[in-house]
Length: 211
Ligand SMILES: Cc1cc2nc3c(=O)[nH]c(=O)nc-3n(C[C@H](O)[C@H](O)[C@H](O)COP(=O)(O)O)c2cc1C
Image (cartoon, rainbow, N blue to C red; front, side):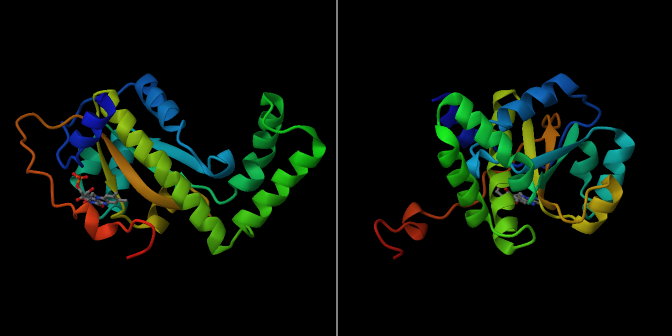
């Protein structure tokens, strides 16, 4: 019930109380909760840059079409989708599965390796990019729900110049930045407008076929 209430209450907060610090420990707790998100083959293709320093937030704001919330939020997370996660994490996934009893014997391990390669394509393929981006999106949503659980507000953003952020924060060109997430507390005295419209379930749902 708490989770359902939290989902109902989550909003993208435009106005954060400036000057409020969130401790590194809280951010780590938030990230470790987000890290429980499911991912394809458990490959966890995400990385995060936590931007807390006021000057660095200013620099990030410049890359994010001057959105004031980037500077006013307590922290802004640069969510990074990593297409290399198949090579980076694949063996650890297989080793862990073998240790935990999900896989038995070399043959099953080899089968998993083959499936990973086949499913997620060549390193620079669109399939690989989609793999990374969709899983990072699940991580991001988990993070926003976890933030609610920790009494924090969030705002996801894709209004930014990806190239500029990569340059400013030393993020390799082959990574993808699906979104930034601002985190903090609602500015005192601000009342949110009502939640914007959502389509009816019937409009986007087909039972047993597309239409
Ligand atoms: C991936 C993503 C990117 C977004 N980018 C921006 C943005 O750059 N600036 C902004 O003001 N809102 C941004 N939003 C917020 C949406 O406008 C907001 O989620 C939507 O209007 C629904 O409002 P709610 O989250 O309060 O329910 C983004 C949301 C998502 C999920």
